[in-house]
Length: 136
Image (tube, rainbow, N blue to C red; front, side):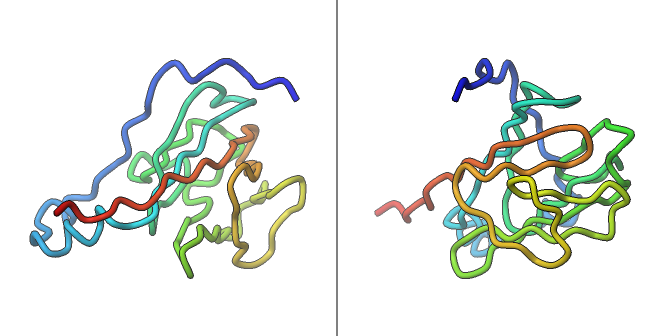
């Protein structure tokens, strides 16, 4: 398998205003959560990398944490959650669908390392980041 060139830039995730007022305990818990990267390997978003965490929403609206400027992506396309220590993707009834490893999903679908996630015209490779352990 030939991998595409390394991403050229990191995309900033949208941070809703309400998250800015988190207390320190919430912030500490969030640092320990599983996080991942969606690396666009083909399509309109090729070369971009998006950070994903529990609750990240992908779509064409600028308010989405994963903003995709792709006419084939719905305004609010899908959501990524974490269940039992793994990412799960939920399609929001998007017209073009959310596809995992070539199969259109119709319900919440668990993801694993290196799964291909197609949103609109772009294919992303999922990379998970190990959970951060609390510093002593």
